[in-house]
Amino acid sequence: MTIGPEGCLDLVGHHVEGWAWLPAKPDRRLRVEILFDDPPIRVEVLADRHRPDLEAAGKGDGRHGFAVPLPASLIGREPVVNVCLPDFPNARLRGTPRRAILALGFVTLRTIRPLGTDLDRLRDFLAGMVRLNGGCADTAVPGMRDLQVWLAGGGDRCWLVAERGSRIVGHCRIGPGWPAQATSRALTLGIELHPDVHGFGLGRQLMLAAHRWASGRCARLELATLPHNARALALYRGLGYVDLGTAALPETGEIHRRMAIGLAAPCGSAWNAKRGITLVG
Ligand SMILES: CC(C)(COP(=O)(O)OP(=O)(O)OC[C@H]1O[C@@H](n2cnc3c(N)ncnc32)[C@H](O)[C@@H]1OP(=O)(O)O)[C@@H](O)C(=O)NCCC(=O)NCCS
Image (cartoon, rainbow, N blue to C red; front, side, top):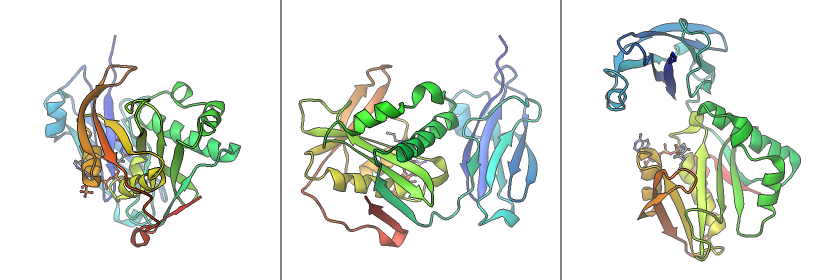
């Protein structure tokens, strides 16, 4: 069986960074085409930069990275960025397409409404995230009915979304389920932001909003994260989550770090106006 090229668009900001290689020919350096819209600009580069993380992950000698600056004429225009491999027209890099957001601006945090249009938008966001990560949205995204049933399940659950303009850019779900034990007074939290808005502190604000919702509703929040997810671990530790050891994901057995934070009584509404983040609904 021939294994095609593999790669990922890691970062889109002042620079566009990623990697691409052909596992069957690890010494080959692949041509990469970066396409910006608004107005269309095309940049071609060779994926030949050494990246220690690629080498450590067994991607040949690790010389498969690429990085190009965002064209000066596009700064502030938030262009869509796509990456293609001219020698493999059918290949698609994980993490594509993306939007080059350099300043977050105003974001609204709110609870999802159990209405068709709102749930459709949430499902579209979740499907986009699955596709971005190379998965199949048809099987991985909960159906409308499942979402409605989950939301109607009781006062022990809440689904928050972060909206930038009319676009959902992140979500955070709190409710019963693994890794919290059914007999404990704990609920479980899960969070995911679109990579376009990583690194602006939005994860922290969404978590704090979730804590405010959960205060008075449960004694503590639990979560599980992959041990190599350094950004998530930094976020959780910075918020005061403590390590409870390891836990295996029931479906796959994959080892996660289990963490928890104790919650005080409801803590008011000191929203972060400085960052332009408000919670409504
Ligand atoms: C994890 C996630 C919610 C974090 O949100 P975020 O807004 O991007 O967080 P930030 O970029 O502001 O970074 C949070 C912390 O991690 C640190 N950090 C950022 N990048 C890092 C990296 N590559 N390695 C280590 N720490 C990093 C930041 O300095 C910050 O710490 P600080 O608050 O002490 O300054 C978000 O990146 C995300 O959705 N990731 C994909 C999905 C995911 O991993 N979900 C969690 C599953 S358990």
